Image 1: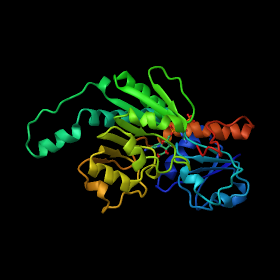
Image 2: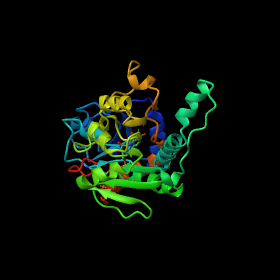
Image 3: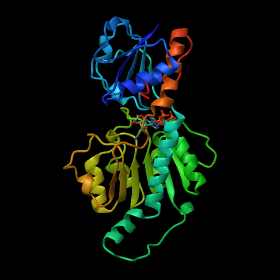
Image 4: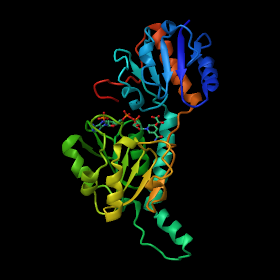
Length: 310
Ligand code: NDP
Ligand code: OXD
C-alpha cells in the first residue's frame, strides 16, 4: 500500500481519485486537508500547494506537479529540496499547446485582429498579405512544447527558429542557443513565442531590451508564464509601435484583474491560461507510472533538475 495526497485549488479531487484509482487500485489517496497522519504520506500530487505544506510531510518521497511547469513549487521557501519533483510530460498537452500556438500565429499572420476591427467599423479593405514563408517565427524554448510547435509551424511553411540553452538539431528549424544566440534570434523573428519555463534566468526575458532587438512591428505570444513579461515595457512598446501586437495566455496575476490595461488594449489578445490544460485521464496514467516506479525502486521519469529549475 502506498499513500498519496492531492492538493489542487479547483474542486476536481474526486475526478483525480477515480483516474488514479483506475491505474493504482490499492493507492490510499487522501485529499488535503483531510490527510490523516502526515507521516504516512509518500507522494504528493499537487498544483500550487500552500507554502509549507510539502515541508509538513516528513516521509515524502515524490512530489508530482499536476502541470508541466514547476515554478509553483520552486517558489516555496520551505520546499523540501531533497525530494525529487516530477513534472507532467504528456503528449496530450503537447498537442493542445501546438494547437494554441498555431491558432495564434495564424491569426497574427493572417491579420485577424485588423480584419475584426475593420468589421466592427464596417470597413471593406484588403490588407497586403505575405506568404507563410515570408513570416519568421521564433520560439523561445525548444523543449516538449516548443519543439513540437516549431515542427508543426514549419510544416505550414513558416520560417521557424528556436532558442534554447543548448544547441538543437531539429530538421527544418534554425537553432540559436545561449546568451550569444539571443540577439540574432530576436533580430530574425517577426513573431516571438515564449515557451520557456520561469526560472531565475528567464524572469522578465520579454522586456524593453528584447523588444528593441526585434524587427519593428514584431508580435509576441506569451504562453510560458506571466513572470516572463515586463508588462509596462510591453505597453510602452505597443504605444511606440515597436511591438505590433501581443497574444497573452499567462499573467503575473491570474485571473487578470478587471482594471488591467491588457483587457481593453486594441492590439492585445487575452486568453485565460488555457493554452494546454492538464488532462486528467492521460495525466493520471503518467503519474501512476511514476508512483509505481517509486514503489518498485525503479528510476523515476520526467524529473526536474533542481539546479536548472526545470
Ligand atoms: P521543457 O523543460 O521541456 O523545455 C524548456 C525549454 O526551455 C528547453 O528547450 C530549455 O533549453 C529552454 N530553456 C530553459 N531555460 C533556458 C535558458 N536560461 N536559456 C535558454 N533556453 C532555456 O518545458 P516544456 O516545454 O514542457 O514547458 C515549458 C513551459 O510552458 C512550462 O514551464 C510552463 O511555464 C509553460 N506551460 C504553459 C501552459 C499554458 O497553458 N499556458 C501549459 C503548460 C506549460 P534546453 O532544451 O537546452 O534545456
Ligand atoms: C502547466 C500549466 O504548467 O498549465 O501545466 O501552466
